Each structure stands twice: as C-alpha cells, then as structure tokens.
Figure 1 (spheres, rainbow, N blue to C red):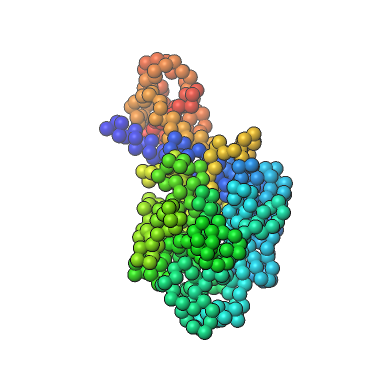
Figure 2: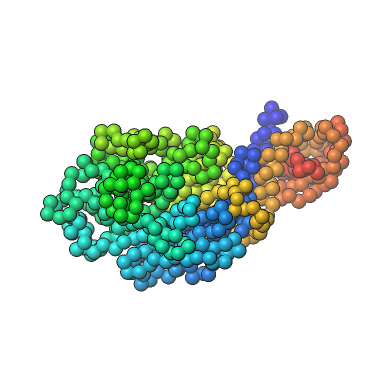
Length: 550
C-alpha cells in the first residue's frame, strides 16, 4: 500500500510539473524520445528556428519583418537553408490564395543570402512547397492562370464555375547554378473530359485514369483548382510525388522523361511520358469509386519514407501522409504501400483502379480531438520508429512511440507571429505552422556548428523546466534509495547504498536543506516543512520525491 501511495504522489507531481508550462515544451521523456533538432517556420513571422528537444533555440535564420513563410524550409547536408517566402502585404497581388509563395532562397549557416529565385506575376506564382534534390536542383510548384476561354476550349463545364479564371499547377526543376529550368511537367498537358465532344480532351474518363478530369470536382472549390500543397522526389525511382488536396489524392509522375516527353504519353522509364503513373486516395476522380472507397481528405505532407531511415526498416520506401479531415473532429496519420511492380516499372491496378484499398498504418492522437487540423500539418517517421506529428492549425507537435505513448510535446509559443509569455493560453489558428521536421544529432549539416542553447522563443520561460522533466521521469527510476514513511508528518527515514551529499528542494526547485546521507538508515526531521511535495536530489542529480502531510 505504501508503494502504491508513493507512486500516486509521484504521478501527481509529474502531472503538476507538466501543467506548469502551457506553451513551448510541455512534455519530455528523454529515454523514449528520439534525440535531434526540430526545424519550424511558423506563419505570420519571418524567422526559421532550429530547436533542441528541450524547446531551446540552437540556431535562428532571421529575416526582415516584411516577409512571411511561403511555406516550407529545409536544411541540406551542406548546412544550407532552403526556404520559401513571400511579402507580408498581399493586397493587390494579381494571384493570391492560401499557401502562396513567391521566392525561394538559399542561405548559408550564417544567414548570408547565396541565391534567390522568384516567380510572382499576373500569370504565375510559386506556392506551398519545394523539394531539394540530391543533384542540387530544386523542384517547385507553380500556379498557372487559365482564362475562361481556355477552360471552355479544354472542355470545362463553365456552368458549374462562374469565375473568369482558374489556376492550374505545373512543376519545374530549377538549377540554382544558372537559374535554368531543366525539367518541367504541367497537368494541363494531361487532361480528359466527357462533357463536350466538340472540345479538346474528350474521352472515357474511367478508361483513362492516367489523365486528369478537367471537370472534377463538379463544383469548383475556388480558383486554386488543384492547390498542390506538397512535393517530394524519390531518387531511387526517379519519380516525383505531389499532393492534390482538392482531389483528395496523391499523384506520382515519371521524372525520367525529358521535358518534351513530359508533355505527352510516351517516353521515360515508365513509357507513359507525363501521364500519371499512380494516383491514390479518391478513385472517384476517375470514376472507379466502385472499386475502392475514398481514403484521403484534404491531405498534406505526402512523402516517401526514406529520410534518415534504414533501408532495412519495413516502412522504408513506403508513403507517409497527414490525412487532415479523416473525421469530423480528428485527423489521422497514414502509411501506405503502393502496388509497385519493379519489373514492369509501373504501379499495378485492380479492376482498373490503383490500390491499396486502405492504409497499412493509421493512427490518431490518444485523445483524437487533440489532433485535428483542417489544413497544414506534418508527419515524420523517426529512426527509432517513433512518429513526430504536427497539428498545424494549433501549432501542437507530439511524438508517439510504437506503443502509442506520448513522449514529447511542444506548442509553438507565438500568437499571430508575436512571442508570448510562458503560461499564456493559445487558441486555434493563433500559431499556425506548416510543418515540423526533426534532424538527427549526427546530421552532416551540424558538423562543427554551434548548437548550444540560445534561449527560447517564448517570453519569461521556465529555464529549468526541461531538467525537471528529465530528472523526475528518468533519474528517479535509477535511484535505489528508499524513503519511508511516505507521506510523513515528522520524520522520514532514508536508506542509502553509499555515503553521499544531497539536498531537499521544494516544488519550485528552491533548496530547503542540505543533508549528508550515510550508508544505511538516515533519519531526517521534517517537522519544520510545510505540507507539500519535496525532492531529495543527490550530487549525481538522482531524485526521490516525498510528501509532507499533517
């Protein structure tokens, strides 16, 4: 019974410690969490932050207050930062939708600008995401304005679309050494429609799943028709994957084509040219929903699972997805294993539709409503098989073990881009963040770099909070010292295995008393201590808790 009471008391302490922080780091189990550095680029402000797992800033790439994310940032092996940005003021922009970008930059570790590339005019605009490639080139997503006349000529039913323009998407690969576009793919070259036989692209949609129905969805969701929000490159397959949230699908393209081949239906390793090699998530887009039901709902952060993951890991090479609107009040993270046939160099179909029927891994927050984000957000499989998840609309990140235990939690401590005090309450959409990404401690980019802590994003931080969590959750378990009775009102007995100095602290980490523990039983008078929870800490940092109750 005494052991049970002690456990309950200690658990109450852990809950109390965790509740002290409302933003920044709120939970950390160092033994079970994957150690690394977390890259974030929060909305409504210009800076990119690299944080350790204690939530401390170890590096910052600062920018002028006139800029905003547009939307992603990546660190290369060479220690360069590649980021997307746009001007803070969007009034009067000829093209603007959520996720809009404009500029891609490369900066060195000291934040010196090495390269800048911009597309933002009346016809085109960069947006959402990029994919740095192993050869140093960068894949980018571009909005492409189409007029009403162009839509009608391509077979669009404009009775469902009252606007005078629509923005399609295309992909470019840019070489930063000379600003040359070395490869390009446009969805506009791969259309189909069954609305008007007198117009271009007419055909049977179900017979051509490799093509894009210009009349899907039947009711327009806005001028940003596809709203492509993620792009990733697979070097082993030489393929590009993009996320099309308005279609609730992911698409895979053959990058081994030339730009000329990418406009047609032949060429490349697949022999398909620029037609879709694979699409998944909503087979209603090509009228095969009688085969597989819809599985994706305005998804984000689609990617091949290969960064820092061993090829021997069973998840290696599979596809990770943040499924934003999986339920009415919750999101999920999903992994799928696409039906890849390496001998035929194609993704096989079942009854004309691409599988699988469902994800082989799907997970929610242990309290599902805590993971719900209508947009934004990310998921990353870590090398220790934990999963790092960011709910973008609430700036809330957490790390799950394979047993579904939460071992790390962090809330972006900004409100509309401004730093807030520790203890503040942050509401939904106050601290929106597109993604969070964790780099291993031994990532090549960090060699020789200064990664010592340099403060916190939040104001008035509890600088000892991380140490409290680490000591109480980890070191406590390692110390074989016994304390009894616990709770006590007057005397506690401490049984120590060695002679050692120690001190007693209160809940606020204030030292109350220094004591010498000898081998064997040590009786300590606690009659002067007010009711409450106290800690005995040794010189090695090992902690035991006891409670004073009268």
